Image (cartoon, rainbow, N blue to C red; front, side):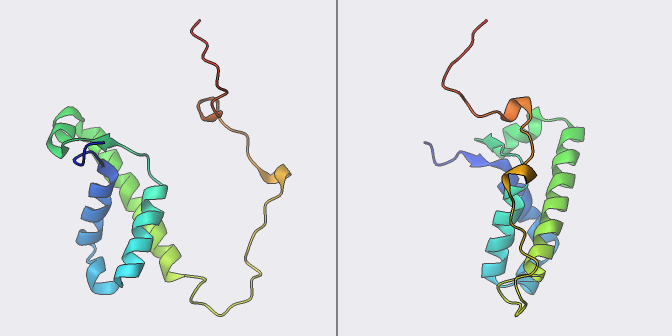
Length: 119
């Protein structure tokens, strides 16, 4: 795979971190954790060149991406600030899911069956 292919959301998350001066507030480990947590909440948009992405995407869509990133970063920051690995609590807040708790997948999320229906 070419080295210049990347996830555009990574660019937006990094930009948001710079806007919020996270490098002044958090350690590199915390920033790395927040990056992973943020990106796991966002859709993946692989691109080759950021300039092409900006030219081909409407202003409304770009604003939506920025709003999504802001919410994901805010959630990640809350998780890191309330890091269970650092707290000395009991494990009462751990939720164990049973099969009946699982949600139903949407049509587009159904795992690939291995058969392609071209009808």
